[in-house]
Image 1 (cartoon, rainbow, N blue to C red):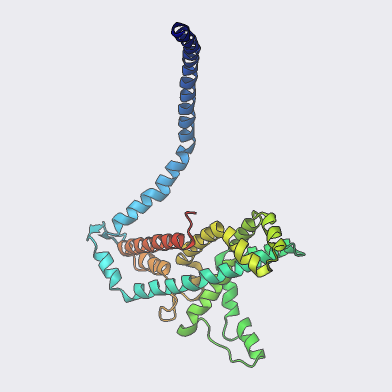
Image 2: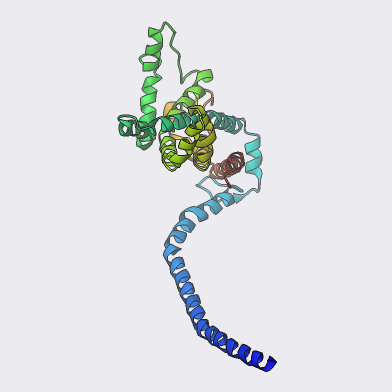
Length: 318
């Protein structure tokens, strides 16, 4: 019986060995095909990598290098180490610009996100003329920032501005909104928050349309109110979109420049000077390219830290 069993086992083993021998060339061919596909993929993304290297990576490295030099365009860069960074810490104007940027971001980002979310939820309910409303809210985002700032410059005009005209009807005295150091930054915050609603609303609408309606139906069966549905279903399901909106909003707020340039030119008394505007002033008005590069590195560090904090706060890795 043992002899029969061994012979039968040997017969059973032979087909498996033949099958293995047959499959091996297929695995080899599949591996060659994968390598070919991989090479094709790298070949296709090579132009994009070259573009990123030329227009992003090299300028970033050059900025880090120039931040360690004394460079004014007219003379060759002179290595000075971290002197520019020491000067930044001791510069009251840049410190004021940093604080103004933080305050501007602190107010514009959450306010515009909250308004955009409310508008997106309202426009996602199948209202009449909702396409027209979406276009109206999104239009400022695709309009030139300088044109937007010019319109708000007319609104804030202390003599004939629309805002002071409305206040006079209510018996409230008008204000020099952009000339008063106590009001200028708040006025700029209003413009920034209003201008950022459109793109955030569009992102939230796209995210809302991906939420399964059966979740709301099940909550209705359980007797959940509209507010309960919003906090128990809508907000948690919008977490990825909220993280994305938060990151791009922070980056946009820290990079604000156009509206500051048109509305206040950084004044009065540097009350609306932002980090980007101070970088512009150092580079193109004072021609201190080394200092401007160091200030750009500081701005990059702020953006990196704020992005990491936002990721942790919204649990973006989920």
